[in-house]
Length: 126
Image (cartoon, rainbow, N blue to C red):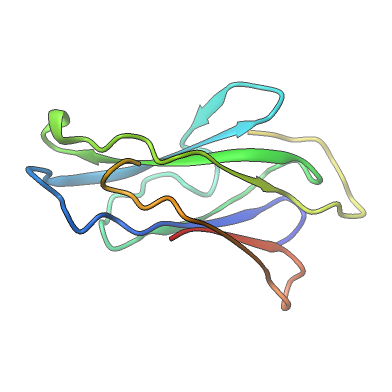
C-alpha cells in the first residue's frame, strides 16, 4: 500500500435471503467528481469469499468515498449499497494526479489503520 492505493474489506451479512451470489461491486468517488464503478484493483469480484481488494491508480493526498454492493443472480435480491465511508490516500513525494465503492447484506463499520510495513492506510468495512 502506498500513496496511490487504498485497501478495503467488508463483511457480508449473515442474512442472505433469496440471494444466489453473483459478485461484489465497488464504487469510489473522488470528492470532486462522480461515482466510478469497478475501479482499478477492485474488478471481477466474483467469489463470495473474497471480501477485500486494493484500489489502485488513485491520486495521492486525495479524499475518497467508497461503497460496496452485493449482486445476486436474481436481481431483486441485490443488496443496497453500503454506507459510503471516507478515506484519504497518503501524501507521497511523487504526487501525480490520476483518479478514479451495502446494505443490510454488507456491514458498514469504518476502520482505518496505518500499515507499518508500507506506510499506507488500510480501510476496512467490517
